[in-house]
Every structure is written in C-alpha cells, then in structure tokens.
Length: 636
Image 1: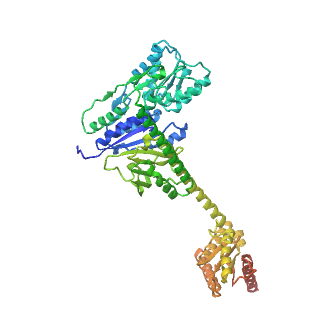
Image 2 (image 1 turned 90 degrees about the horizontal axis):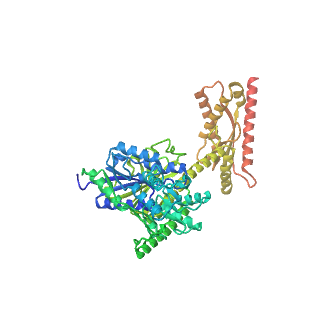
C-alpha cells in the first residue's frame, strides 16, 4: 500500500467530558498523528439532561456516518448506555464490511477487540472491601446494564457478595449511567430510603464515586471513617482527591494507542491478534482506609489543577460572551458573524458549521425515531472558519459529511450534533483542536449554538407570520391590491408630500356598475370574478407614483402624485379601453362595467386626504347619475 496515502478512520463515542474518553482518545490521536491517519470522531452527549426527546436529537450525529467512506472504524460503544443505539451502530458497521476494532467487548467475533477483564478485577476489589475491611452491608452504584462494562462490573459485585455469603438488598442498588451526577442521585435515593448507612458504596466508575463522596460529606458523613467508597478507572481526579479513591487502574492511553495500531495493521493487511486483553488491577487507597503511596507529584498536580481551573474560567467567559452576543442577533447572518468572532478562542485550525439545507423551514426534519437518516440529502455550510479565513459552501451531499471533502492530511476532527429537542438542525466540526475533549463546557457550547440557531429559525418564521399578518391587514385577499387600511397608510404620506411641495395630485374614485344584478342572477362566485377582473384593470392603470386600492365592497380608488390636467383623460381612456377588452375576452353573459370620477387638484391648507376623496367620490356619482339618465332616455 502507498505509504503516502492518507488513512481515514471513524471513531464512534458517547460523551467527551469524562477522563475515560479523554485518556483513550489521547492514545488514539497520538498514534494517528504519528502514522498519517485522518481521524473523525462522531460524538454525542446522551443522557446528560434527563430528557428522552433531547437524547433522540443528540444521537442523530451517529446517523450521519457513511462508514463506506472510511478505511476502518474504532467503536467505543462501551461508552453507550442505550442498547438500542449501540445495536443500530453495530448493524451499520457490519453492513459496511470495513476493518473494525471495538473496545471492551468480545461479543462480536467479526470485530477485533481491546479490553480488560472487568469482571475479574471488579470482583477482586469487592472481595477486598468484604474480606479485608469486613464490610457486610454494601450499596452498589451500577453503570448501565446494556453496556458490556456496566454489566460485567454489576455481575462481579453480585458474584462476590454471593460467594462471601452476604445478602444482596435490591433497594441498595442504584442503576446509573456512568455520569457523575448519578453519584448524587444514588446518595439522594439512599438518604430518602431511611435505611442505615452501609459499610461501603461500591461504584462502577470514578465519576460516580467522586460525587458519592461529596454528597455523603454534605450529609455529614466522613469517608472512610463512617463509610467506604470505591470507584473504577483510577482517573486523575480520583487519584488526587481527598481521600484518594480506591479504584481500578487500567491503561486507558495504551488502550487507545494500541487499538489504533491494530486497526492500521489490519487495514494494511498485517495479521493481528483478534482479541487483546490489557492488564488492570485494583488500587487500594484512602477511601477504603488503605494507604497508597502512588500519588501524583504535588507540583505536577498543582499545575494540572490550575490549568484546568484557568481553562474552565476562560471557557465560561467565552460562552457567556457568545450567549450574550447571540441573544442580540435577529438574522442568520448576524448569528454566524457572532460565532465567527469567538471561534479563535476554541484554539482550533478549522471550524465548520453545517446545517440541513432547509433548516429554516418549519419543523425541517422528522424526529430521528421515525426517520433513520435524520439528515436531509443536502446540507449547507454557511460558516467555515479556516485559520482565520472565512468562507461558505452553498450545498453539498450529506453523505460527504465534510462540506469540502476529506482533508488530504493527517487531521483530528470532532463531529458534534446541533438539534432542538428531537429536531435535527445539523452539526459542527472542530478540526485539530482539543476543545471537545479537554473542556468541561463543550456540551454547553453545543447547546448554546443549537439554541441560537433554533431561535433564529423561530424568529424567521415569526417575522414571516408578522409579514403575512401585515399583508392581510393592508391587502385585500380577493383582489390582491391594497384595502382601505393599506391605502390610507401609504396615501396619507403621499398626500402630505404633495401638500408640502405644492404638487398637483390625481384621485379617481371608481364604483362598479351592476354588481347586485350579477350576484342575483349568476351567483356570488361570478360577482367575485367580476370584482377581481375590475381590480386587475385598475391595477394595470396604476403607473409610477400611483397607488390603487379596493376602498369598499365594489368601490375602488386610484391616487397619483405629481399629476397634470391631461392625466385624467389619459387614465380614463385607458381604463375604459381595458374594460372593453376584458369583456371581449371573458365573454360573460353580463357586462363588467364601472363608473369613474377623477379630479386633479392642489390641496389647500385646510384640505385633507378624505376631503379630496370625497370630491372624487361626488364626481363619480355625478357620472353614474348621468349614465342612469342616459339609459332611461334610451328606453324612452
């Protein structure tokens, strides 16, 4: 295989803000950058806000992936708590028939796997708490059971309890989702139960264990004096909290690095072991009453902690400014301008905002649950920020994923979903920037962008609705010309200008002849037809500087500025000619006819628009009266 060819791999993961994902991803990325690999992460933050509807929109990003466009895929499906989503992803990967490495699962013989023995190492930890520390009453904070790691650790807990002859109280088991907030919920549930304090809280990961400790302390309990707490993963925070957490040490960075190595070798046709089990071991530390001398260097710990605090404060400020700026936008263009100004603070090379082609339409996409593809066939990228330069892409097939195609270089790309509830709006891509994995506020940024785009969409439709209401307020729906309200609103300004500048104005008042005869003899539909044809003639007689309107049921009006005495004759000649032509054209059993009265005048100091209208109206009725007298004399 050509050593210069860029290898493109996809990584599917849930959540980016936990240490497990961070350390594993760092291993993948370092291997990729050393070996000319272009990595694309597709990530969501499911289960974060306690809303099933929100999660449907969040996981839409996984439906974007066209696996056939990649040379291989790494599946971190052990980070998923939802079995249905995992199953859907696995089915699509299988159908793509590309090399695949999966983390922490040996259930799929068609995939290569990298894992630890979760069951054995968790059982050792539980046995230590029971046999060495004499624990008899234990609360267990579980991970999601559809998750293979969550299930293995849960099974290990039950097996250790049974083998040691201890009863399992189902009410002392809290089923979490590996999220830190689950630790608080577990303690809240225990406190509400009224049960006695257990000897230990054994947690399926460190994130939940750390929150269990802080929640217990808020209730006045001391760890480990009153109750022991254990975790799993031996993360940086777990090692350096006080008390230091008893946990399970696992080679996360190595797992990511080796998984990427196995995948590359398989892609290149180099034989690899189908399953690799990495070492993991319990670390007995202060939270269970043991002592562990393997602490991080204090100076290094201070530097890391200060850096995290500094970065978090900076990110909070950036998102607050972004939120404030977006709140003032009223158009899509203004929204994208605000986003562009703050992209540089993400410290990335490239940022691409990708939206469904019809994202501004009302309810542009069906929910993911009923439309598996989620994304429209075409997307638009209104904002591409590339090393400080801005451009856009009008439309591109969503199957391309990247608006401008895959980069012909080694890159790290993060795809994150934009949605409102279960409605897919699009996604954004951060290239060669670690913000998605180092910042605790990546999900907050994503929700801020999603909400602002949804607000613009709603404002767009609100403005359309207001425009339509305004149109209905000033436009006659039958004739599609101004109604009385519209005429007065516009003509009043025209009248004032004529008065101010001493201009002559023309005003014609038109009344349809014989509308009652048409309605009574041919029906109201024919009456409406006749009115519409008359309105179209009146509209066609309106030139520049003129306005026409339906003033009443069968009454119309034309108002022109800067008129001359010859304008009346020209207007009425054209009007009568058009009437004659329309009757020849439609060939109805009745005649469309109207009387028109016109005046050209300069308004005096005490004149008003209504007084001028009244003058034209009186002239029109005089003409109508003369026409009636003429018809009577013809009959005589």
